[in-house]
Image 1 (spheres, rainbow, N blue to C red):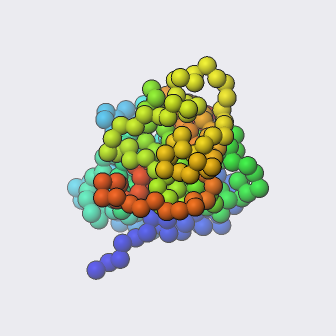
Image 2 (cartoon, helix red, strand yellow; image 1 turned 30 degrees about the vertical axis):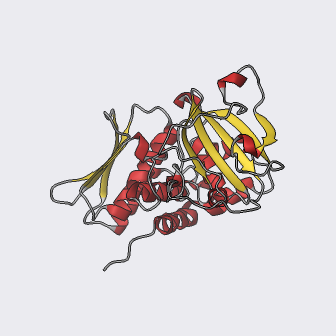
Image 3 (cartoon, rainbow, N blue to C red; image 1 turned 60 degrees about the vertical axis):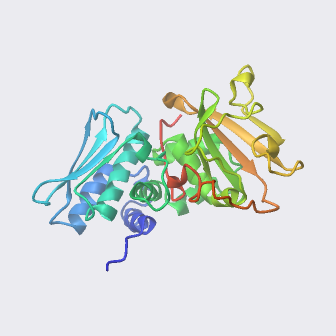
Length: 304
């Protein structure tokens, strides 16, 4: 039995080639050109033959093969105006091509399948996101961009611009490698759309099971409409405001930013190391939180 291909290893292989050929000029990664050239070189009898934008109805990206299985086509939704989103979609479909093309002949990926899908970390959409995130924002270079700088949305905006991805994608990439507990929340109308905790936060019980229920933002949250008159974009408050089981003396840093034309607000929660581990219960999510598809990385909406 063939061992499954590892998403990040596949992406790193391509990234290393781009580094050798283009050096620092490889950013932002031209995912469409990579899909065409890499597949032709490595799989000449069944390459990606075309990458095209179309006004797709009901999904963001598509990978399909012809009847002879001699040519593959990648489509992305041209109605999405964010180039960062388009770039990530193409990279996501390339991930399907490299990792999963022997499993099925067609992949139709909706909005919830790319970057923000609510799935567990072992499904193919998660793996395609892991591949895309690693290809577009390789860890070695990403680490250089953030090293020695205090984290904030300005710094993450710089990363989003460098890699040609969305602010959300850059933020998700950052929480993966944060040395403290970190949580990213997207919200609209005082309710969470999704939430992503890094491993340290998840293991301590600091996560939101948005797949299973609708969760309202805490009243003290900067993104809550009750606080709409404030211009503050960051605050220090008791962690209990977000996570009632945290000790009273534990504080967290909360930062917010409106995520462009996707019409939602991003909230970043930064917490100190956990003093204890929250036991898991049978009625809680067994596979990490709702945005687990990016720990293994992703990107997203527009860059601003």
